[in-house]
Image (cartoon, rainbow, N blue to C red; front, side):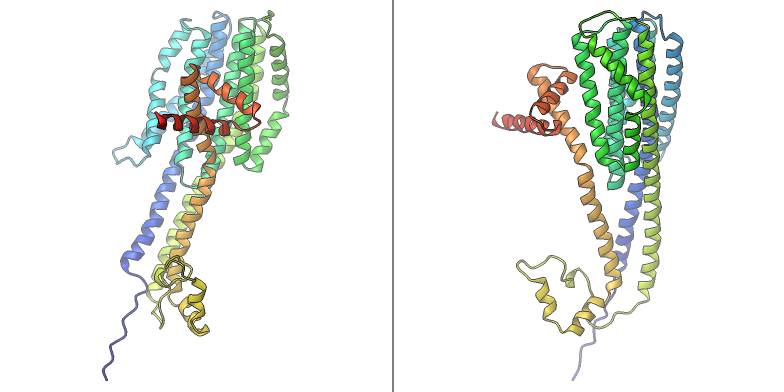
Length: 446
């Protein structure tokens, strides 16, 4: 009696092996791009810090009718120009080469807007030097530029595909946003002191900026490690923090418009600058941790790639044994037939057959499942890490709704959200979600 020959069981096809390595290569490419983005983030951080100091000095210069901070302002301008040159040099080397650019379009778009704003910095500085702007106009111009640069950080966090790096970027963005509000507080305070009086409206604006700082510091603490949270706690107990608290109390008592010596503007600026310089030290620690993590991720992925290649070479020398190879087709742990019991599938086999089925061809399939599980775990962790980013997007959308509905400025719209959250004892993000939901339903009915 003739018997058909047993079919040859192949551990894996050449195409399957190539796709396995292609998936790991794609992960390495994404991580390398993420590492490059982290270096851009560091350069953006440096430019923001210098622009914040330049903005404050420009305010005192303008509010004092060019009597104060003339030379100091020019020093800050020079530092900003150096930081800007460094950033643009890095951007050109990374994105403006002869090779095909692989950058994310949203990130590149945000970079383009920020760079367009920096193109007009010389014009802004000229107007400040000639005192053709009010302190408020100058503050708004610099703040818009800083906001555009912060958007670059935000987009870098939003497109990051690694959960650990995303958490660090979320922590960094919120810390930098809090520092920017501290910078705006310094700028507004400098205007009040230089003009030798405060009013209730300015005091209310300063209080709102202080609340905004706390909001973003809280998110920072949620996504940062213990060492960075401890650094913020140390900062909050530092002499600079104590001094700024005393000056804040003084400002609160001057809300009735009582006169104050203009020279105190320099004291205020120096104290606020010491506090912000201490924040800068934490930003540096955050970005160093970020770059270290990104480089480590790339190195680990490359090591895994080399390991995969070695394992595949070893698998090529293995021969199939009797029994069905463990693949997705015969893996009882994988979803398949509806209402099917995976436990029953194994129970119907004798113990020795179960062992044979689970051991045959397991090495290669384990490698496949391990890589798939790695990607799945990253996706789940990434979703949690990006929750704060989604909250920020909701807040931005809610601000636009409030601005349009009540004819408010962006700052006043944000303050309205703050007050509503405080009155309902909830978060700004929760209030923003309600507003966006109502606005969406209203738009659908129309």
